[in-house]
Image 1 (cartoon, rainbow, N blue to C red):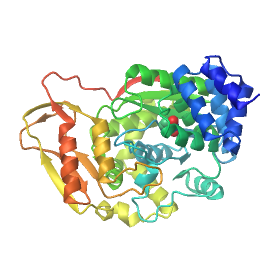
Image 2 (cartoon, rainbow, N blue to C red; image 1 turned 135 degrees about the vertical axis):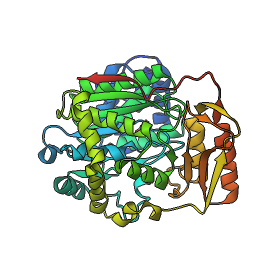
Image 3 (tube, helix red, strand yellow; image 1 turned 90 degrees about the horizontal axis):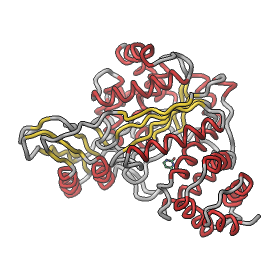
Image 4 (cartoon, protein in one colour; image 1 turned 45 degrees about the vertical axis):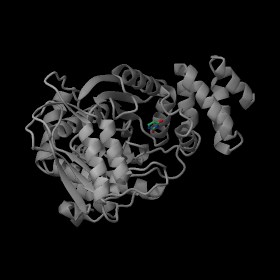
Length: 436
Ligand code: URA
């Protein structure tokens, strides 16, 4: 077996064996297979796809390329996790984790950073002074044992093959392969010890998957990987044609998550969180159906218990709790500009990708992995698709470091809005694919 013959086999559309995939992943992780061969392999996969069995083998090989956590001694038989495929304004984890924990199900979650137009949970959390996202394996375990909740970056050496391959895919035009995305996401969940996973597969302009059919296919692949590897997986296909909620940008999103946990978040975001949390409780075996868990989840938001869990999380990870108690003490931008609607009419589109890029250009995201992020900057949209605006109403607010950056963002975000009487209001969710 050698790397060249494995590349040629994939190039010629012949399925790879489990041994060949393992050989390639292990060799690349060790550094025996060079980047140029791995790039050619990824491109062959991108162009020719993988069978389900190949995708399952790829996932397992990447999951086992480093440490694989076993959290069952701390969390019991069901180790629950969630993952979003990445979007704009997606601060769901900040609300959903405390909600689920408030219902009596502990959750130990590892999250990632933003890349390109899509935000990342770790960047958002680091808006809070002192919040430590880099826990050791022992700290991770101790915190979930003591507090029932932990939310940090990847500990130790989890799925190193994915980290290496993802960086390579990012610069070789091979990120959008469904097999590679599915393998990347699922390998990290499996390496982190998850046995029950709710996947939030975003679909639309602000997502990797632009069409419902593509999102459905990606979701189905990940559910099948779960079935193949003995994991329970529910994939929700959710809308990302417009931003989720109103805030886009790190501290602004933390503020919106706090508002939501205190009972007054945007309606679409609350509904989204309740749905994701409901599915997590179902997979955890807490409630058989969403109708049973719904009133309980609503009560956990209303009575402040989810909010108290979030405070506990921030405290346990060294964050300044007084700052989240008074969110006006979170980082704020020096230039804040309200932009008015130029037209009276019904909003028919708010291009999530353009909003994400505007936030990125303001400094809220990063072009390259090593770029720093500016926690204070971003955007708050005040109207959603289907809302009627009067000319002069405040449409959105730009939070910028400088006047010129605010001007450029204003132009871009204004151009991302469309008005028409012919509208199709996107649903929050398009589909659910689940096993079991
Ligand atoms: N998120 C991941 O973790 N991996 C991908 O390949 C794409 C999105």
